[in-house]
Length: 418
Image (cartoon, rainbow, N blue to C red; front, side, top):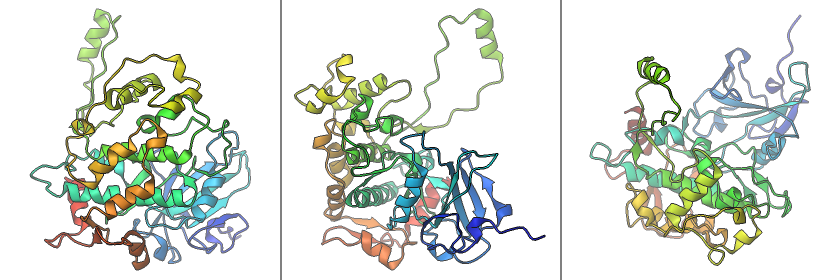
């Protein structure tokens, strides 16, 4: 007896939740090729037909990623059904392309319906690139600024497009930014994204964002904020990471109560792997929200109710007393940041403790456009996609190559492989 084809390999399947670029056509995945990636919710699979080939948007040719989540409505604010419908309605070269999304029926293995999002597959995250020692402005890599500026410009375009559509991502960080081999920047993971008006003021979720990229208003449990402002802060933090120094991780201190046997065992046990250089975020979220807030204030200065009037509406702000830190020059924390440059101009305007003072994403895009600098474009953009990024009214222009003829993909490959 023949086995029924999986729903994702059937045209206009009854399990189809959202039509993406394939408009309900079969994805044409080899079921035997599906294999889990790190984290367990993401799988990689091989295509065995051509339907999806024109829609891979610079992803690994012949492969797709499958994000599998349960449609559990108790895990607010995460909403995989909303994520699928939102991605199906978005079309931008720097935002993850949805091929199709499907929803399975509950089963003994999964009592909740499971939602499967089929998208292009990108193996390289921005975090991977940040942790590469070759991604540094030294003699061996004089092209650092060209790559960093291209990434910053493309990511700003993605956020600006979302905000124009009335959508806030709410979890922008280097793990949720991937790159194609040609250097196309793609924003992923819209699980806690929200559209304007979907959450009411006073009832908004503050348990969103990731660690060092969470905005100050989230730290102090605000339930009345503009979701787009969270993205602006996280964009500033993420762009700042491009210019942070590489450093070895700080070794944990031994417990103060450690006895002689415990110390002997620790010193004689199998040694830990050799620590690797990595870029620490601009702000420290390693232990608690209190530590995160203090690290923000050490860099940007401790706010007062006069400089941060929104704090009067934040339940937890009055519960803490912080030392009075003066603001420090942002460049002193970002040794790789060149001045003058569009990014150097933009960062202080994004990293404002008061959300009302943060520059809008559209103004960030215009800052790149008006810089007069040539910005490298990935060579895997279609003509229409290139037009979206290159529609400047003068000033900066996206270019295919450096003056010496090299492509962005060549620069990126050297920085990742080294």
